[in-house]
Length: 108
Image (cartoon, rainbow, N blue to C red; front, side, top):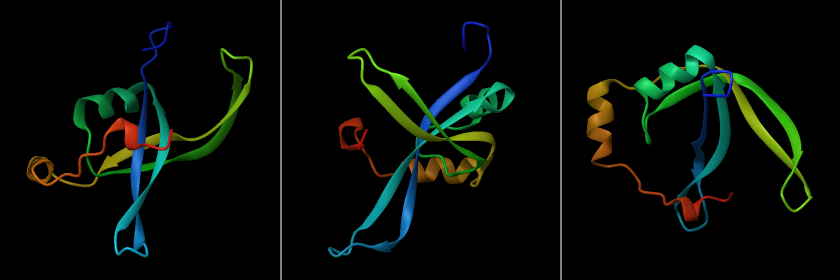
């Protein structure tokens, strides 16, 4: 929630690439996503880490000055909505086979 009580959620969406690298392994891109209001509340209630979701929205670029006084540029998806792409039973069974990625492995 923001200071004005508006629901907001920020998360990183892992998107698998449709091909394998030279070592025969699949790679993923990690995309920052921001979603607001009722859609953010629904996301918090229905999704968890590893959920298969579809996102609709726009790419936005913004910038800010960090604590060191440097200009930081951010590109992210401003999501309008999301759709669960698997059933609850599929979510539960995929938890047993999900890939564990630590925050240290993320590129940001």
